[in-house]
Length: 261
Image (cartoon, rainbow, N blue to C red):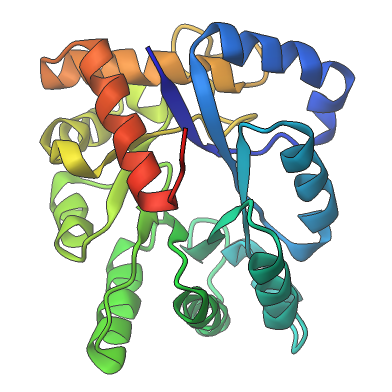
């Protein structure tokens, strides 16, 4: 059984002492590929180094919405330069809107749209972070598509929306990625959303080191090997086998990110 973890943060310091051991565990768990996300250009060199250390790792480049105040006239050029020069870059992001911890809507929107422009120029998918901002993210994407006459490709990562909000982004052509939050006891809306996403738009991730899934929740950092627990929960919610979920989400990840296993 093959699994793809479509969103990791392995460059964080807490992985450095035992990253090789962490890799051994994801290999034992059947994780055959990973997509490393990015929150700020300052991470570019560390993420790129890990991606070239491990053949099964691809990565994205971008600026997280909570770092929107760090955007400057050079940021787009840095993102575009690395994305166009390294074949291991498979997406732009993570980008988007987050009004859980910030309310600077206008600045976040400007930075979000600028990165959509980079992704469009390079014909790369986007990884979207959306927290307490589903209507606004939908509006930005819809306006972009209406104005540009082109559909944005990408994924709503670590999805936490309702079934109604999920349908908004499915209608816009997006993939929906579920993390360890779908295993949480009280995550009823997320679980309902996971049950209704069409099979050809479903992805899985850990978002490690955050959001360790049940049964690992509360036991320390999250890691890529735990993506299997997300797949198992999706299988339960959807009445499918974990093997079917693994096969479909692996196929979907390869389609979205242009991966060749």
